[in-house]
Length: 168
Image 1: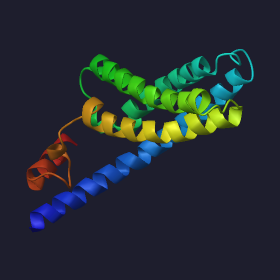
Image 2 (image 1 turned 90 degrees about the horizontal axis):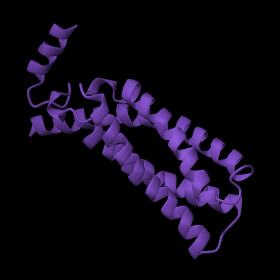
Image 3 (image 1 turned 30 degrees about the horizontal axis):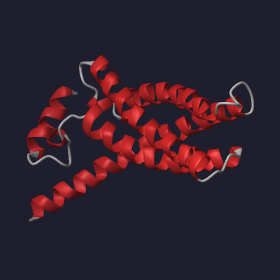
Image 4 (image 1 turned 135 degrees about the vertical axis):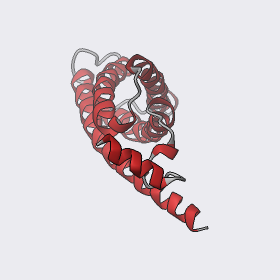
């Protein structure tokens, strides 16, 4: 029973660090996404707000790829960055779909067409739902080293700690 409790504690500690870093990257990505979206909404793409969201989110996604690969999940990077990038893009396309769906429902089903309504539906509600999906997708499908290799979570912590010390 003690082993199970230690594994759960290790998993919580591991995920907490990743969630915190992911939150920082996500916060910066949110500023990039919504900053560019506001510029496009009030300027050159005012007649196509859904396309403006696609452009702004695409730019924020590229930032997030680099930040997550080289900071948040740097200890899980694989040896095939193009495979990770392809998976990252697929997962972000699904996340973007969640954002667009929220904004589309607000605009075309509920009839809210103001910048504030678009911002709340896509930039807040859609982003929260998309972010939950993205974190889980990045963690388990994109940057996905096995959990048993994590210090503090591994069933065989002594072996992992010895390997970690040997690698340093």
